[in-house]
Image (cartoon, rainbow, N blue to C red):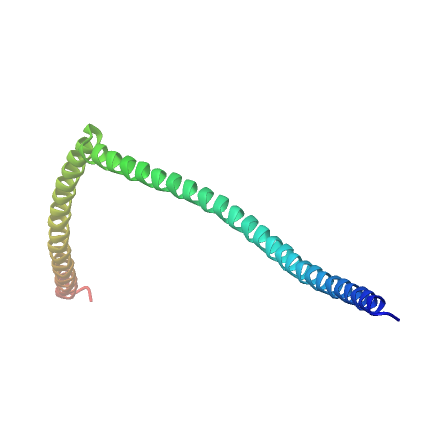
Length: 158
């Protein structure tokens, strides 16, 4: 073998070695790329899922905010209506007439109570007088009986 042939073989061997090294290097890079790509796909899927959750929660939050505003408006309207009803109810002609009627009835009840008290006192006095009259009647009946009996004994018929 000549020097030229040896160089040629060495060069060919080096080329094969370089080519093999390049292929291995390339396979290693492809493997690393596939791993990174796989991680990117997982990250993208997770981000897409998070994005979906955030969008759903945002929609719910907006709906709750609208509902809250509607409830606040209803509460304010109810407070306003209550104020109006109170104002009208207290100062309305009907309420004034009812207050006057209540005052009149309270006066009438007071008069009726006074009359009732007087009647009870008078009835008590009458009951006392009736009891006295009944006792007097009993006494008189005894006296009459006694006088009637004494006359009969005085006639000599007995």
